[in-house]
Amino acid sequence: MRKPFVAGNWKMNTDSRSSVNLAKRIACGSSEVAGHGVNVAVFPPFVYLDSVAKALSASSIAVGAQDVYCESKGAFTGEISPSMLKDIGCAYVLCGHSERRHVIGETDELINKKVAAAIMGGLLPILCVGELLSERDSSQTEKVVTRQLKNGLAGLNAEKVSAVTIAYEPVWAIGTGRTATPQQAQEVHRLVRNLLAQMYDDRLAQETRILYGGSVKPDNSDDLMSQQDIDGLLVGGASLNADDFLAIIRSAA
Ligand code: PEP
Image 1 (tube, rainbow, N blue to C red):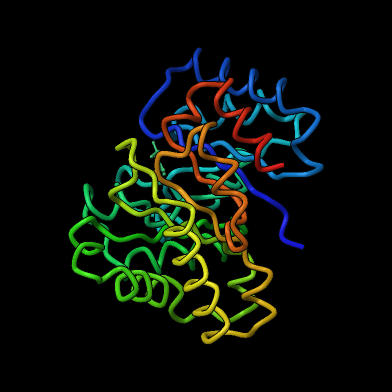
Image 2: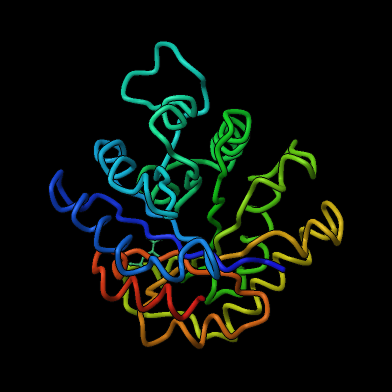
């Protein structure tokens, strides 16, 4: 019912040549699975989106941006609008990645505006939520994830939210090599699905894909994907290595 989805967040890595090479290697290696058993998308840095989108145009791998601004055009120096992303072939956009929340300082309110603007602009947002280690250690996970989910989707009706994918990414597991156990991840994924049912309806909750992110590697992706409410994986570091990313795609398929 929910098609598995594997997304590779390249963060601030690669250059003009290596981004295209990486995209081509992933497209070549995933041709049997991508588009059939699993959706795959890569999220290169803004400046390489256009060339990566061109390199992938004959494949079934989608391209997404790591961020977007919440206005359609105007005096917003340095920002990129949803229509600009659409224009160069982006399908997806990450909203509220933990590095944007905790390094750049984005608030729930701004992230909500970005999710809404992305949907209005015809993009498919991936809303990222997840607690800090101190929040997990003080039993605040449920409270934090609930707040981020409700605030991130505030003002959006079920029809709009049907364009959204949720990514649960515990901050303590991102880039640290410390993955949540499949059970820890499943618990929060179940919480997110229950919240979606409460906020909207059961159908939307059952249809929404919830990805896990946080030090996903080929050796833990099978176990994570075996959980009932884990519908895919948002992969950072391991998505920069074509062989590792392909192995993760295969485990999702
Ligand atoms: C991410 O960037 O969303 C991420 C989960 O990174 P990593 O896989 O490197 O932990």
